[in-house]
Image (cartoon, rainbow, N blue to C red; front, top):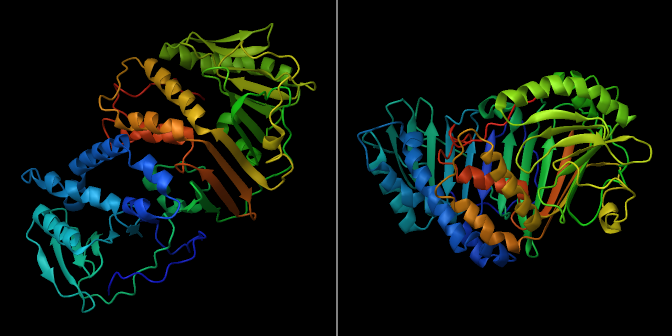
Length: 509
């Protein structure tokens, strides 16, 4: 067996068979961006000084936890992090493939394409990091060299070197990986910048995903197109889903220019009606479309509208339940109060700094939309004098197979989301902020260079959704802000912040 690649596979993502890996990630490596076609701009965004500092912070933190992942805890081996730290930078720079067929990732294989010097360094540093003396194994398929070590917890870590790559594998129990086994050819690596597949139904428990959702199998590829990135994804569900799709009906008096973002989504009514939390509100109609938007002339503003017949009376009927349920939770958290303003027929969360979330009837002639927002009392209710651009509306209004459409000016949306996250932290009882916020410094540096991000999701069949995104970094503004918040978490790689740093927002029913 050798790691020499097969001819590149087609770039179009395909849903893997159910028997395939539960998780598979292929990355072309940061070094490829420096010489790749159409990647000069991306290379600038990912290799500026702030990006380098962010990767250093990331690798320093991972180096503290990686030894335990590979070999198990060993307090006596204090130099293991220093041995593994340089390998993380080389991993990010190189083409690699990681895959596991194990829902808990107790067994996995990492293949990294390295030159001879780096292959030798990886083998030496991993050997010296082991908590038991490694054993040299027979050549794999008559080629290369291999060794294995058994951890105190009973699993094996096996390393195999070939002429163009190195393979590291972890096996839960039994024989080491690779050793003397007759294995098939290495899977083909595509020419894409990134390929990712996740079998979410099998990963649901490991990722702590809600059991009430029928999770799909997910596959994605990212390629460079011009100076931008093109992301394509497929979400394949096991059973047919009644998407309930129709032409979008826009709340024309509510959506106003100058816009910095706009989202239209539909087809969720069947899922919504089955939620116990939704049933508790006793609505007479179930919305199946939702629109969200933000404007450049109003800071901190986020707005949404959903179809709802007799919207004014609906808000009146919601008021007692909101005042009792939400009001109780908000009062316990000590973060303002829920109030019902009769002259505006408006439910609002008042008493917080700057933000005043609200729901009220939208200013539509037929009184058939609910309007939600983050800044009560600042949106005029008269006729729409600044309609959205026709070019934007034409992207989604005529289409009946469109499930989701999202457009944003990513620079402007980052300028909105980051302060909102900071406000949420201020409302914590014991707020604190990460001391080395390298990722947020990177966001500030690249933000002026980020333009439009456009995402479309269509229903290709009753079981398949297909998504396409055009972007500069592959992520939207809120995804970038969440990523930076995660990377700057003092407890990284944990997702949850320490209790003294994570905003404790009041729960909702």
